[in-house]
Length: 459
Image 1: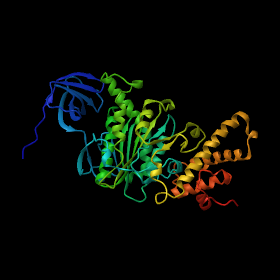
Image 2 (image 1 turned 30 degrees about the vertical axis):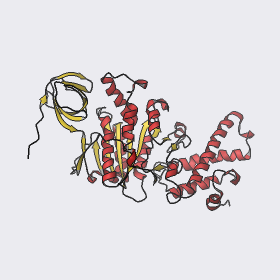
Image 3 (image 1 turned 120 degrees about the vertical axis):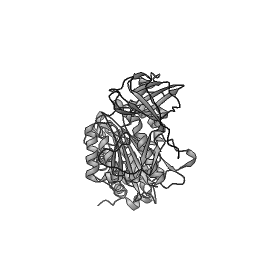
Image 4 (image 1 turned 180 degrees about the horizontal axis):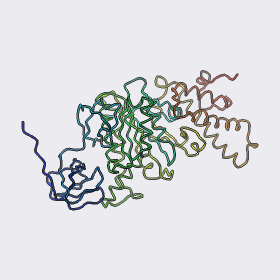
């Protein structure tokens, strides 16, 4: 058996700018392959080929460029970025590159290229099964369906980390083989400690694979972190036939890393300085969610992104909205009033919701409950604005009941706390109980048969 060819070390670097190192006079180098950089003080770093042209290669460093100079040596490995995957990864914590954090080892079943591709539309299966998060506002009104991409739109100071942790520990797929892949990008040490303590304390870590890229880690490492996580999810879903929920936080930090690398490459900036290919790059990550023919597994994505200044038209949430199938929106006003989780159901949307609810999936009355509460809450908010102008004395008795419904809906339905896990039947029962505040004649969005069957009788 022939031995593997030993790759040469190049000492022909011509430029170093930020995380980018330009190496001249190279041969046989391909886009995306991993390389090793040996500094003059004998440290060994990792990088990835970002661009090639004739005999020149642009290398993106995954570590700090501190100590790297033009006398550093570079060796190209001829291999792409890979991660060794195995079911033994469950319950383990890795860094943003997929390297184990802590004193543990596992034997990979195979090594996979992290630069996966979007699922071929011809081989996709249509999402049609319910994932229960135990959070009433999501399960009832913005239902998450297996194989869906449903981002959480948050803002500075809002508790998206608490919501992510709650989804991670409470989510289930009806008793089927289920796993969480959790990837954090650019989070602080304090946030990382919160996640780790919560996962370990609640037992959520046992069914999870966790990847952590901290704020003090190289920012370019954030570009590979979601790819490592999604490659792991693809193995669990399509090789082991598991149902996998991928939680990615915070995609805003990921996009900032893209902008940093694009600036270092002197690329022509797009909207607000972000690279013009950001849409394509985001789609390459988001479109790895779904279900495929020939496998019973699924990948469901819940990416979390903070909207700068709460601006929904900012390029990051704007582009994410085009690619994904809806959004869950956190509301600063609800958060200020102490409502947890502060999910506003009115701007929130799940485009695949109707595929995953109804008889045999959740319950036959699910759609009626969601539609009626959405309409009643929207009316309540309109009346609040009217009251702020003309006062409550000008309202009719029915209008006052709508106001009572809005307050009860926020205090009892939306506000369930971070550690309350409600089943879908409990959620629907609570919804019917809240509807007793309104006159029966106002329940125009619910089917009469369901009103007769599920609406509690007033005592």
